[in-house]
Length: 182
View 1 (tube, rainbow, N blue to C red):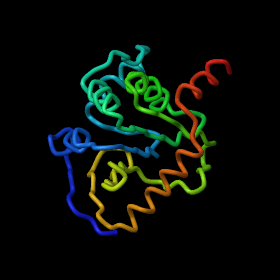
View 2: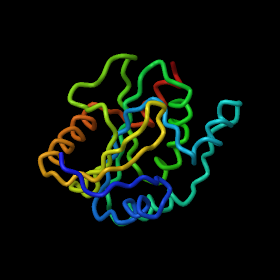
View 3: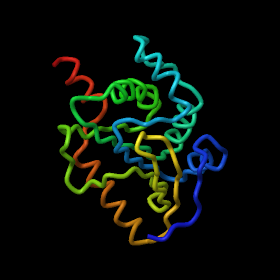
View 4: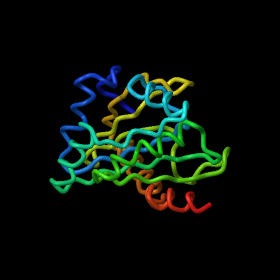
């Protein structure tokens, strides 16, 4: 795979522009069972101390609503291993405002150590079905870089993986409803 730009600051303007410049769609595959990003640390720590995840919409959800109002398709799939880690329990609750704003948030639940067929074990964003950004994290889930891949074969492969992930996923709402009854 050939790479182009590399973004090392996940809170900087260059990274934020990727999400504002969406013309038709975005897709996100998440594969880690724990992320360690600065902007989540306080909220996750509060959750670990018994406070509920914040559900008030913010600027991210306002952007989602604007994209959805412009008929852009926004979807993400997170492969989640069961039993859930504390981080995934928090993240599933933290996803709710984005889901309510119109992002199609889905999960693929698997038993720990299993993996869904045809789905890679790395994170990526695919914007407008053509701009591929591989997400790189260290062993603890800390963001290292977003790497633009401009190889057409790699983009096609990631579209196939997206389709496989979507086909095997269930909506966050359905997953939450099934697990509230369990």
